[in-house]
Each structure stands twice: as structure tokens, then as C-alpha cells.
Image (cartoon, rainbow, N blue to C red; front, side, top):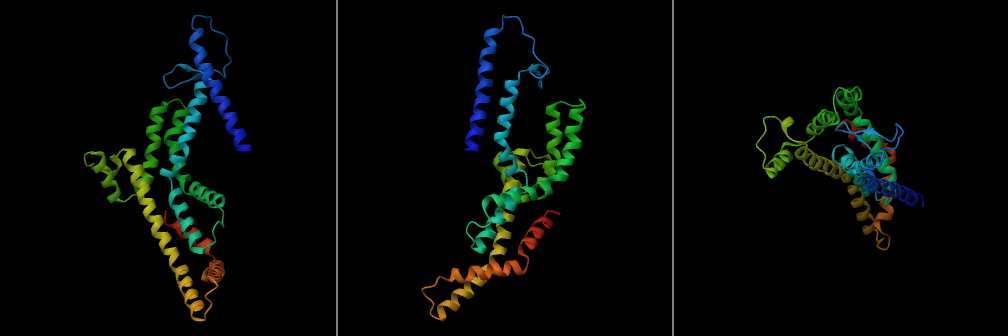
Length: 255
């Protein structure tokens, strides 16, 4: 119910903004009405923009926010590893998706904080001081993010997208555009996530094989081996402090 109310409010705001935008051209010949300072906003071209168009722009950027989060941060690797870990433990939906996503988000924030500080110093502070415009701020802000992605991107993945985009071979990886670096970074993160997930699977797979062989040898054919192996895997994971080991190893892989 809360989500439906939120979507309804957003729809009303967008509809109101579009309605105002459609009504504005009909009042071109009329005398301009006095407006409060909060209604007029200076745009990229130095002209005033109405609040309705600003709302539409902000809502449009919010649509692309999940894609930016998934394609330019360690969020993909962390979430893939957590998914493999839960499958290896055999606990079905425990921890829940919301718990794993929340933990991945906070770990992503922890890892991306230095990059965010660099973006703030290079782009946001000069923009607020009026030294550069929004387009120059976007160009400066993309440089620290691109350096972060290139640090964890394989040359093989970069070469693949350079070949697909038919770009000339650059002298340095930093000369590549963001449209080449971002998909190559996602492929590299998926590969690393699957590699770590496979390593996490091995000890639990050994437990499954041992339990299956023991239950079969003693004639417990009616009892599924997973019923016996799952408590053993959870007990082993708790005894070795598995969450601390897994999260610590993942975080150290970025430093």
C-alpha cells in the first residue's frame, strides 16, 4: 500500500508538471505573472526553467540510478558472492534478499566513499563555487569513477569492447570513453564474483558428498541428504565465523 501511494503521488507530480508545461505556450501573449524565487531555476544554458521541468528531469535521473549503481560500483560482485554463499549453505531464502541487498549497499558505500570524496573535490565544489558549469562538472566527476573501474577491469574485456566499438587502440586505458569502460567493468566483476562463489561452494560441496555417501551406505534412502547436511554446513559456517571471513576477504580484494 505504501508503494502504491508513493507511485500515485509521483504520477500526480509528473502529470501536474506536464500539464503546466502544456499550458505555458498558451499564455505567451499574457503579461508575466510575478513568481516566487523558488519557482524559477537557472538551467544549464543560463535561462530560467520552471519547477515542473526540473521535477521531470530529477525523476528521469532517478530511473537511471539503479543502472548506474549496478554498472559502476562493486555492488554486482558483492551481490553475486552473497547469492552463491546462500545457495552453498542451502538455506533457501535465509538471509532474505532485502538483507543481502542492504549489506551489499552498505559495503558498496564503504568502498566507494574515497571515490565520492574525489568526485566532490574535483567537480561538486567548483560547481557550487560557480567556477565551472554542469557539463564540465560531469566530465571532471567521471574521471575518478573511471579510474576506479579501470583498476578492476581486465584488459581482455577492454579489448573486446574496443573491438566492438571499432575505436582505434588507445595509448592508455584512461583514454577510453566511459561507454567502453562500464560494460567491460561489469564483465570483469561478474567473472571475479563467479570465481569467488565457486571457491565458497567447494567446502560445502564436500560436506554434501560425505553426508550423501554416509546416508546411502547405512541405508537411509528415505531421508534426503540435504536434511542432514544443511545443519552441518550452518554449524561449520558459524564455528569458523563465516560472515566475518567472507566479508573481510571481499573487502580486502578491493585494496
